[in-house]
Amino acid sequence: MTGAELLRETFEIQGRDFDKAGEISSEIKVTLLDLGIPAESIRRSVVIAFEAEMNVVMYADKGTLTFVLTEEEVKLDICDEGPGIADLELAFQEGFTTASDEMRELGFGFGMGLPNMEKNADDLRVETEVGKGTSVYARIRLNTHG
Image (cartoon, rainbow, N blue to C red; front, side):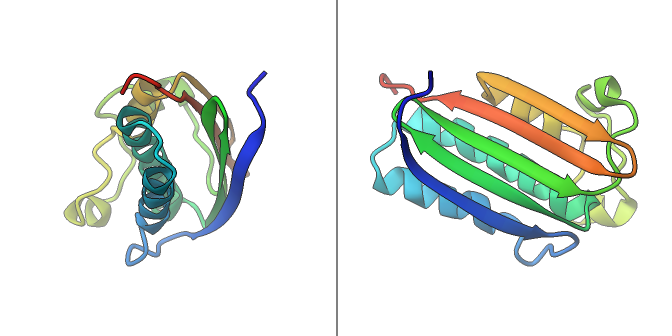
């Protein structure tokens, strides 16, 4: 049981659009701040949203990020139309990356995306199929003490 849904919004993410990369996670941060959500829950939600958004920008043709706020948690569902992840276990290892030199020169792709999402989520599930895309489902419980 995850409580009543208070807010739901779906954002489109365009692959390779580094100029707009990070805007969705920034918008989610402002929304959660305006609603008075505890700071630690905001931080964890924004880290996950940013890492997921960047993975879509870096690797996929396009994707969506659906943000849902309930009375008890933040839900982030990110689905992309990208290459998929060939070795999911390897992708969760800190420092593993398939980023191009260009991506790293822009300051991205240091192999911390999935590890950071895993560290900040109370529940994280990744479904991927090579040649089809990847979906990430993250849940962050609202911390009433932070």
